[in-house]
Length: 90
Image (cartoon, rainbow, N blue to C red):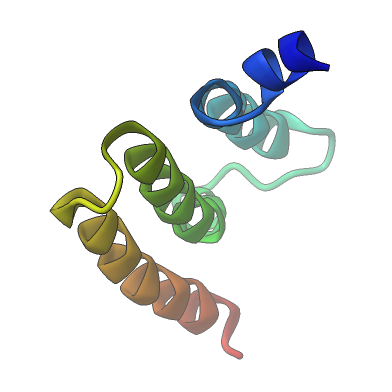
């Protein structure tokens, strides 16, 4: 159990997800039938940005504890969420 936690618990898990995010963007962009114009690409970036900000906040907290970097990433996630909602017109 300890070895499993060493790989998937804490910072390595955040690093693995950070490595997968660009692959997710590419998969969404190049899947069959997907639009590839600038507006569609911006929609995908706006959809992924809030999660990226929150993931970076978690990673920062795991690395440095309660640091200003955590607050910064959390602060940036709010406008990223609002931009995503505006792009989706919700």
